[in-house]
Image (cartoon, rainbow, N blue to C red; front, side, top):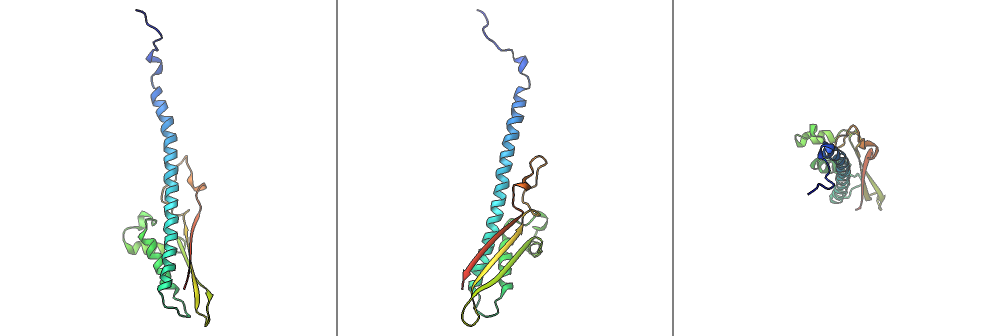
Length: 163
């Protein structure tokens, strides 16, 4: 019997390690991209939900000429505090989350009554929440993959409700 077309294994040492490194780097970049976009999507949903919660709270307030914007703002901040968008350093207790969210450089809440009815009473309320995502990203940036160029710097959630 003769040997036919037998490839020598000594010429292929380390080839599997090189293939693994190439495939793993591409796989990790894709996985990091999915996780980053998922984190931004989650944060956008939390901001939009908080604006909606504030608008629903405005419906429950009594219709008076002097609209209680502080109560709606507190509902929005409580909704944001219940989500996972506060950085880990400020996420120990409900009070520390609220204190971090009260900083206007992190979150801005605007409550504006509109469409005035007869007698000057607001007929609808708009709630707008702005979250500076560029300063408070959920996932860190990697040295070779800079996700800050892909992501928006500010996330905005808006809700309007008719009273």
